[in-house]
Length: 573
Image (cartoon, rainbow, N blue to C red):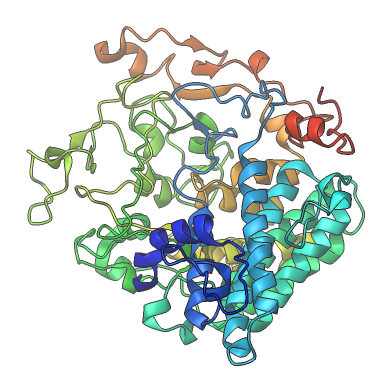
């Protein structure tokens, strides 16, 4: 984290002080109080500090978690229920193109770097190309084809300033080339010095390529577009290269932290944040993080008390302890009769990340709610989850994934790319490529994730005997593992299942015929119920995902007014 202590200063200086200064012969007119271009970009450190600014654009806590169907925010999300309209501006458009402008500027400076530092600058050129691919990927996912700007724009570049959208194929090829170029000149994680930990590695570029390729390949496959198979092949190759590098290891410390070990992966800090004082240094799973430090850059508060609550959809996705879906005839699922029965004999990940009614948990918000590491059973510490609707929860469920248990300031990182996703990507891409996956490939991927929580393996024989669809189980595993990390909405769109999943009601706990209905603590509950007795938070009639419109976002209307050659996405007025 040493490099980050100077980022704020350098970014402010660069954005305000990079100016072209003219001078007359014999006169030194360089500014003495700001950094100007003629005296910058002279050393390797100049380039390094310039690139630092783009790390702040990495995703952070609660990124897009409320845009799909497995969480319910305290209010209503217009994207989740498709009630949003074409706006004059768009935050993703503005942030991405702003970053792309500065990235292009930096790449131009890399190209003109002096021969003495040319080789040293290559790694920062690679980092810039990674970030350029990252931002163009965000734009492609959201809008489809968009204008491709690959150089620093000048006022004379009218063909680019007022040009049309480039095709999806052009943008996708550009993203792939930028990532391939970056991969060539980035170091392995193990070769990055301690003082530079957190910077982009070869593994990070490969991981982003795997993510992009899986998205683009499956989207093309399920939306009837050409070229999907090539991208799926790329996803297989990139993910396998990360696996074969052996640079990353799943966080599995049950021997030290017990059955809740996985929970602590998301709250690691440099201070004590778990019973055995493991810190971020012990984390070999994260490939790239948005990094925080309580002394330099405090982490945002991630608190799901009133923001995001799991829905019935997510709760029911967790398998029973034998590896069967809870609606399977042979499942050992205990039903919904009591407030605790649905948590019994379930995938341990439900117990790790969901707080059960009556269970004590800890929060960072006030010292009285912090965990007491010297006495984990201290009755004067923590909060007992009493299922207070409208305060603790909207749905009846509470998730504590990523919630710190210690006081401010917080220093836990947000994993942008982690090895878990690589394993899930490899498994899914293999199945999409071959329409099958071997048991040995399942053992290399899905079953490693199950091992760390003590779940039985997924095998082809087990799936066949139980009548399970392997692809559906791979997708289930992905949703459970990456829940509340910002993946679900993109997954539904690339699978072309959003038109089904997002047109269903958002539901919570089962009320009718259960302890919730008979216990006086919830006698005032006034939620609407469906025919099965589950509470409805948002009716299906208010959740209208139009497959002819909503798979792409609208371009900001101000951009279309400024550039009439930009054509709006279909059915957006």
